[in-house]
Image 1 (cartoon, rainbow, N blue to C red):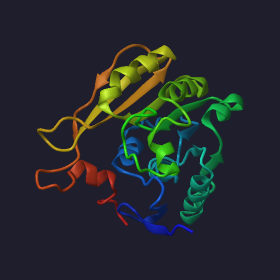
Image 2 (cartoon, rainbow, N blue to C red):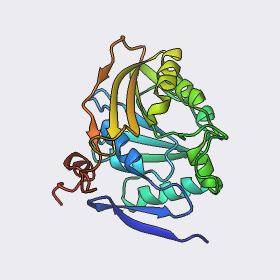
Image 3 (cartoon, rainbow, N blue to C red):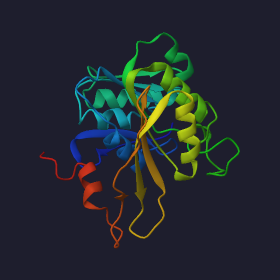
Image 4 (cartoon, one colour):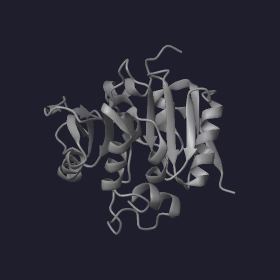
Amino acid sequence: MTKEVTNYLLAYKNMKIIQRKDMFNFSLDTVLLAHFCTINKDLNEIVDFGTNNAAIPLLLSRRTDKKIIGIEIQEEAVELARKNVLLNQLENQIEIVHSDIKEYIKEQKKVKLIVCNPPFFKVGERSHLNDNEYLQIARHEIKISLDEIVQCAAALLDNKGRFAMVHRPDRMIEIINCMQKYDIEPKRVRFVYPKVGKESHIFLIEGMYKGNKGLKIEAPLYAHEEDGSYTKEIRLMFGENENE
């Protein structure tokens, strides 16, 4: 039995998260996406494609009281996600569904917001070659491809609904082309940099289903100061200044 570790969810002292060292653990990408996506008043519910241990739904629950549904294909990740929802007493807001995204979308009502922290690497592309099966599925497009993720998002989005994703800048052109292919018009992009003077290593993108053309490039986000500490903007995302 692999040991589960329970930690505070970043600086939120009233939230905890259970993680396993042999499975995907949430990272800065997760936090950035949860803060980047647009949450409007007309939101009915949020769907998180590939929720893993439910870190994104947990973080989103800090921003909204709307229903959040996490979809996850790996059974053991689903069990962990459900434990995390119960641990934080969010079972009335967050639902974890054990399903393949491609199957889930077939008979569901339309939603206004979908978020996804997808596998960054194509099958066969170099990553961590010694990954176990859990990590291979989380990091590589084994169970679902980028094209399929965007196609599924388009099928589930309501008119003018939004799809937000975090990814690698070297796949940005491919992602924009893919979104437009399925009638999701890119509306917002934000590049994330390790620190000032370095190349961007992460970017965030949000598109609108059947939206008008017009892309906004937002201010750059720097993750670290020169001394390696997190910048003030990142620390705020971590909840450091939140009243406890």
